[in-house]
Image (tube, rainbow, N blue to C red; front, side, top):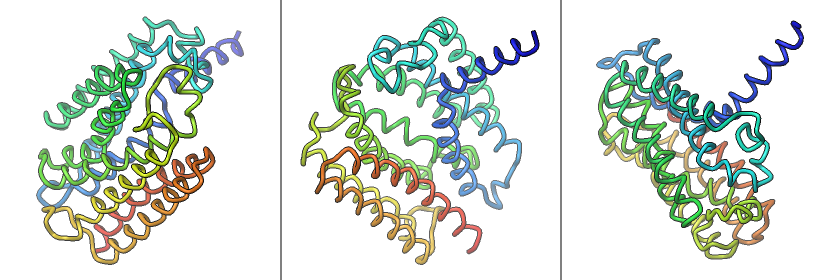
Length: 299
């Protein structure tokens, strides 16, 4: 009896992690935490409860977006190897239960983010709306879905700053811009090495629709834009968001590392090169945020 209950609880917890994409949600939270640590100052002092609400509310919002997405795409997910074993398409969870979880997480998330300040809740709500109501339906229609999806995907980094300061200015806008440009090489790399799987479901990810030089070239160009955006805080025109010349050098070298893998993809046009670029891009954004944070506290 006890072992049966334990097994049941384990399966429920596992399905909850899968429906909310716990790994992705936690990585997104890291961006929000980074934004908060960059945003607080003497005028807006560090408050543990704000960071806690940001973490829980942020997880709820990301988890809700992923749960809504899996309800909407349940028939598509069945067709792809990487998604067919998710709770809804596999039949382990009903669409109604997934929708209930998504709705509950949305309510809890909005309440917690609103308790921080109204702007944080507003951007959280915008993120869910764009992800579920615009990005998700467009995935089977046009490759421009990646462009649309880059907007909610870029919100977490700047959301932390807004939570810390209650303001959306040039600083939050710069953080948004960095993560916005990062989305393109990251998701196009995923679209490249999972091309066959996406093709089964009729999902359009790559800008040219093919794994060709045109797509690879755009990945390089957006990586360059990402490097430029990441160096903007060094110039002194981004308000309270500033990095030292040494930190800028580290960020630049980090960008060259990612650009190297983007060029390798252009030359080889293989799934292995695309997967390597995707992994490097994940490391890139986390390391960049760490450099920004460490530089702030060492200055």
